[in-house]
Amino acid sequence: MEWTISIKGKNELGDVCRREVRIDKSDERLRDGDIGLSISDGKRIMATLQSAVVNLEAETYALFRRVCPDCHTFRPVKDYTTRRIRTVFGTVEVRNPRWMLCRDCHPGMDAAFAPLKEICPDRATPELMELTARLGSLIPYRQAASVLAEFLPVEPTETHATVRKRTIKVGERLDDQITKESWCARTQMDEQHQLEMQLPGDRRKEFVVSIDTAHVRSADANSARNFEVVVARCGRGGRGDAGGRYFTTSNTGQHAIRDRAVHALRRAGYCGFGDVAVISDGAEILKRLPRAMPKPTTHIIDWFRIAMKIQPMQQIADHMVRSHSGLTGALPSIDKDIRAVKWRLWHGRVDRAIRDLVRLVAEFKTWQEEGAFAAVRLHNLGAQLVTYIRSNCGAIINYGKRYRAGLRVATTLAESAVNSLVAKRMVKKQQMRWSQHGAHMLMQVRTADMNGELRDRLRARFRLPEPQAPSLFKPKPPLLRAA
Image (cartoon, rainbow, N blue to C red; front, side, top):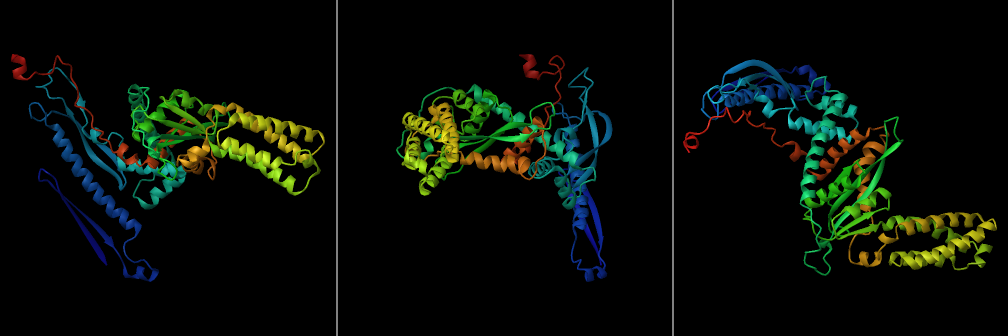
């Protein structure tokens, strides 16, 4: 059985392009379960169709760009070369002419330009760049190259090195776009007070920045073993609402984090004024963000971090009370006292909680001298908790009031962002080493993909401006010359 597929295309000028694809299918293959077209047949059909479409489009656009926009005459020919354009359905070799500038409109200028460079400057279509970058940001580069070669008619040269280079290149392009947008947002940012209408029970009045850090193994032998990547989600709304936009950066500088946060907030509707809440775990590099953000900005310590530091103490105290330890005679209400400390921290009574904790730590130290192992553990945990609360006392608020208002009190969104953006690709199952530049660029691709804007950013027009000539050689319109 022989199949013949005829392809016919016609452009705006009336030129017709015809191609044929012949596929032979013997009846003996049916005994092996080979029914219908295979992946290799699909690759061949799509490669032939893509070659015909790309050649006709390139020829039409090159002819269109040969016409001078000023005098509407054909530009002189510099030379003819070939250009290889990589697409998702194979590599296509097209004719690539170079046109000279019009000698009547640009006298004395001897310059040429390639029109195909305007529509495909990367020698690869934006769709192929997007697909390669998305796969490279989700799975290892070698696996991404194998998936592309399995289902698409790509060349053997599309190796893991190509996937890595394209992913980093796309990340650099996205990073440049975000940097420019962040600079514009910084120039328009004014420190103003709340100008929105105060509506009781409106959880969407507040902008929330849930931020956390992730540790990535460094590939640089001369640097530290790990480096930090800042991951955050910015948006509006309370518990149960959408988390908002992602942003990541490996630059832990105060202004770098501030610019990324303001850029993400502006994409979520922030205009330079309004209540902003920054929820973090108390890390030193994250304490810089609230001080640099526009006012009013409130820094809130993640309640989950505080609760996880109190929980081991509560478990040890409950076990001591249940086991009727002889040491509990000196402090029979140890479990109730620790629970009271947690209650005071939940309601923002920091000073009273610190006083109670200091008293408890002193009691634990007395028990520790008597040789009680549980007292040693309680003393260490209590001392760490006192240090943590004292260093972050200004960011501990009334969590109960905020929780009853339906607002966020924990960095749950940031934790999930760290898991989905960084951990699955770099830390958990793929514990490889990364350079700080490569990790930053890869995270820009992952972030754009999670925000749903990767395709829109890469599908921007790559049209280059008309070759500029000095104003002395540019002809003036007759009316302007007469004036």
